[in-house]
Structure formats: structure tokens, C-alpha cells
Image (cartoon, rainbow, N blue to C red; front, side, top):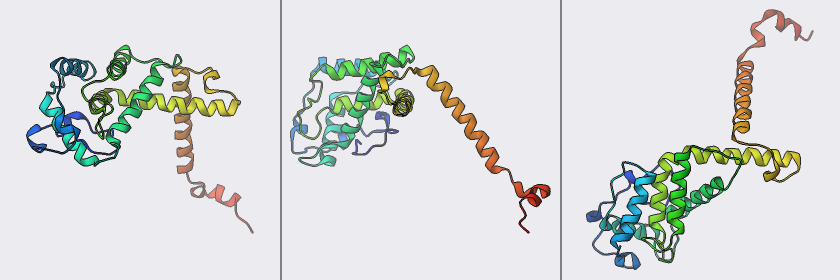
Length: 218
């Protein structure tokens, strides 16, 4: 079931979307959700694009997820399940708008599909529904993260590395002449250097009797 946590390793395929187990009635807006066939079709078409092979979701499943999330969040609270996934959308927007970062066309198309669905309001669960607004957006992001997580994590590391270089040079990140290829090359150099340091730390000067004599204090 949808929960209010930050674990991005969970995906929709492991969420409890069984409508029969969601409760007969939950007070609040989630009990009155109705999904138009056209909106459901658009949502599932986007699901098929960002997560090929995922079965289509129907109205009762989404309503059941909304009821369970509404109970978990509680009246007057915001859902961290939704909030954390919307932050991932911000990362997608940043990546798509960064001319210095290149990625596989298929991954870019999936991110574009997610952003386009979210920007085409109001969606299945309008953002102004208390506690569960934008649940369909969050579920879509959750599905997309199965294939996008690695790419977004690498981009985040690229941004951190570029920001540190900008601080060192005393300039803005956008002014640092670095692209994905250069970032990758520098990271590889750091990995090799770290391996060499580990080997050096693992060696023992004391095992060499001649070396030990050199450091003897009389």
C-alpha cells in the first residue's frame, strides 16, 4: 500500500492496489473519487510508455490506493509519499533542461512523458484534493523510477561535482565547461586513485625488517 516514506526502491508493482482490501468507506474526498474513462486511458497510456509491461490500472484500484493513503496521512497533513516523488520530477525537469547532460533517447522520452502528463492538469486526482492530490502523478513517477533511478542519481552526482568545481573556480555552475563525458572521466580517475590509496593503506611497513630499522629511535 502507499506509505509515507522516502524509499524509492519501492515501486507500484509492490504496492497494494487491491480495491477489495482498501475499506468500504473512508471519510473525505478520496471516498468520492470518480475517474473518467478518457482520463484513465491517458494515464495508462503514459504508464505503458514509462514502464512497458506494467498491467493497466483501473478506477477501483486507484480509488483504493487513494483511500489507504488518505488514512495513512491523516486529516490536514501532506503526503510524503507524494512529496518525495514530486521532488524527483524536479530532478527530471532539471536534467531535461541541462544542455551539458546527455542521456539515452529512450530515458529522455520517458522523462518527457512523465513531465507532460503532470503538466497536463488536472489529471486523475487533482492537486487540490486534501492529502492525496496528485496521487496519480506520484504513482506514475514511482513506476518510471524503476528505469530512471540510475540516470537521475548520476545526474545528481554530476550536479554536485560541477557545483564543487564552480565553488573552487569562484564562478556559477552554469559557467563550468563540463559535460557528462568529462565528469565520467574525472570520476574514473578518482576511483583509480582511491583504489591505489586503499592498496597503499593495506600494505605494512612493519613487515619489512629493513624498513622497521629505519624508524627505530635509540
